[in-house]
Image (cartoon, rainbow over all chains, first blue to last red; front, side):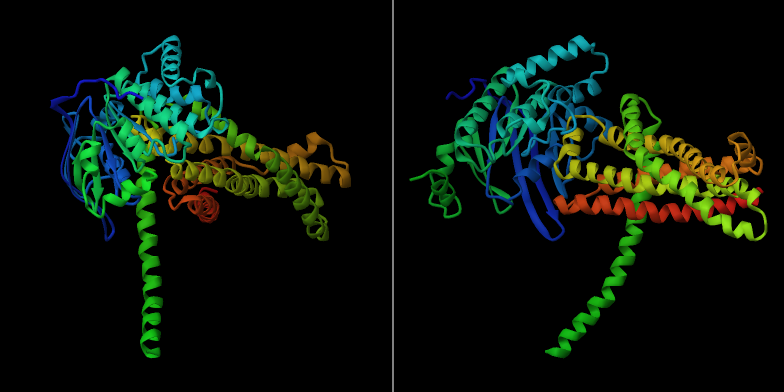
Length: 257
Length: 268
């Protein structure tokens, strides 16, 4: 298992978040998040279920609106851009959903073509076919092209979900629980795929997970989300080199001691 | 303690209707916004022609068998049940005219719309609801595509275009049912029957019937899409969306029927 050897440009932040707050009715989920994601970096956001990890990337992609705070993605402020600008920005961001969110009435081919033909209307059918074949090959599932999502395994669905985002050549990848519900072998394969995507497409990524194996294998930097804020940030070893009772059990229960 | 509990219960009982009234007006506001969004997006390029055609086919195929059966039976039974009443006055020869007025003015659009509300409306509500809870709509949104245009506009246009065609088909099938009864009892020929069918009908009847079908089709599509597109709370939400699509569409169809009948009567 190797981590991608993409140089990280610490002078170029592709995502900058300052003082992000988000509540659902009276339940405060994110309470002042500050974050920077650098060009070429894989940032893993760790935290228990319900701590607002997925909310964070949904706010970044504009699916949810922040209550307060500034969110700059690729130089554009999510809170102030127009709908058209947001739509154009989203083409540059890939979002891999926890349950893959494949369009279950379409074949794998149609799933992959869907965002491409709607965002690049000048492409010929030959170019579309080529792009579909390329991303399917990148995720190692060329043979599934005519299958329906219901015929795929959990791991395959994750890969196709990632392929669907890659077809638009995104600059940023947002992974929501990429290894949730998968067996350990498939988890490792998905982790490898995340690193391969970073290497091949030169993406910067935020990976939301509570799987420490995934965090260790894919993350250049780990950020621990606790009580609505990032309590610890750094390398895997730095984050877990602590006696903090809120962090330690997380490590202990993930790895069999 | 008991007094305190009963006071709380009374307060809750008082608060419930108030909350329902507020929710009703909030929903009304939301559905208006939804309709305005439809008109803003549906007629602006790029158009999803392929998807509109696919949806038209789906709407037609889903309702075809049931509409054929119901239309025929409605025509047959209506003619059979009207015969004794007209027979008392020796006016059974007026049966074709009576049947045609009833079918063209009211029964064909109404029966088609009610069947489509059950078959198509529920299906749209459940389909979009399930897409919402499995994040498929979010996935479309984050990939820079316009899910509202692809999912909502196409379905609403499809129901609006297809229901009038289905209603026309229902009218002919119902008239066929009526003809079977008349031919069996009186031995009337098909051409005589059809002549008597079209004699009492005016331009206003056809226009009102067409407008009604278009309005019903739009209602079925927009209500189904609104319920599905805004569903939440997992699988429970999908069920609620399907149910809400049918109940609300049927209620609105009856209200629209009354309004259009009233307006068309001014032109007669």
